[in-house]
Amino acid sequence: MSKTIIDTNFNFPGQISVYKGKVREVYTLNNDLLVMIATDRLSAFDVVMPKGIPYKGQILNQIATKMMKDTEDLVPNWLMATPDPNVAVGVSCEPFKVEMVIRGYLSGHAAREYKAGKRTLCGVSMPEGMQENDKFPEPIITPATKAEKGDHDEDISREDILKRGIVSEEDYFQLEDYTRKLFQRGTEIAAKRGLILVDTKYEFGKTKEGKIVLIDEIHTPDSSRYFYAEGYAERQKNKEPQKQLSKEFVRQWLIQNGFQGKEGQEVPFMSDSYIETVSERYIELYENITGETFIKADVSNIEERIEKNVRNYLKDNS
Image (tube, rainbow, N blue to C red; front, top):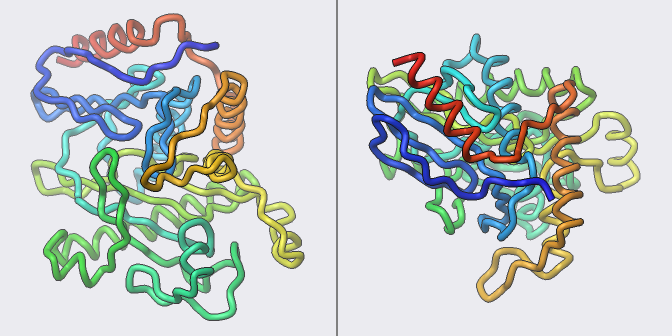
C-alpha cells in the first residue's frame, strides 16, 4: 500500500495559523503568504472517509495549479508557486463565504432536486420536461454557503446572499462574471480532451489590496463533474446513465453500501484493494483531464519531502 498523507502538523518559518479543511490544510505565514497542502483525504457527502487515497492530493494539486495557469489571462488567481507535488503557495486572501457552483447540465444534486419535483434551485428556475443529464439552455449559477468541516454546504440564492449581506452587490456581480468566464474556458479545455464539463464550483477571495482572486481548486474531479463526450447524445436518447469522470463513483459505492452522510449512518469499511481502485480511478481522471501522463511522486516519506521542499522555497524567496 502506498504511503498517504491524511494529516499535517508542520511548523514553517513565520507561521501564524493553520486551517484544516475537508481535504486541504492551509498554513498562513508572515508577509501574507499561504501554503496550501492537498492531503490524500477523501470527502463525500461532506464526510471525510477514514482512509486516504494514494496520490489523490498530488493529483488534485497538479490539476488545480495547471488549470489556474490556463485561466489566469481571464481571471486573476492566488497562486505564486508549486514547490512540491502536493503544495501550492500563494497570496493570503479573505475567502468569500459562498461557493460559486455553476451547472451546464441537470446532474448530481440538481437532478436529485428536480426528481423530487423542484423546478427552482437557489432561486434559479429550471425548465420543465428535462431528463437527468440534459443540457440546460444556459449554464445556471447555484451558489452554496461554505460549511465548516463536518457540516453540509447549503444552497442559497443570489437574493439571499445580497439580503443577508454575505457578499456586497458589486463583489457578487464580479464573482458571477468570473464564474461564467471560467466555466466557458473550462468547457473549451474539456472539449479538447473529448470531455464535457458538466458542473463545477469555484471559490474566490479578496487580497489585502481589495482585489478579487480565484482560490482553492479549479476543474478538479473533486470540484467538478465531467462526462465523456463520445456517446453522450446516444446515452441520453436511450435514457442510459452517462459515463462520468468525477468522484461520483465513490458516492455511488457509498450509497450502495447504505451511506449518504445522514445521521446515524456509518461509513462502510473500505478494503485496501478498494482504496487501490479509487487511486487508479483518480490517476485516470488526471490523465483524461490534463491530457498528460501522471508521474507518481516519491511517497516513501511524504511529510519529510513536503517540509524540505516548502522550507527550501521559503528560504530561496525570503
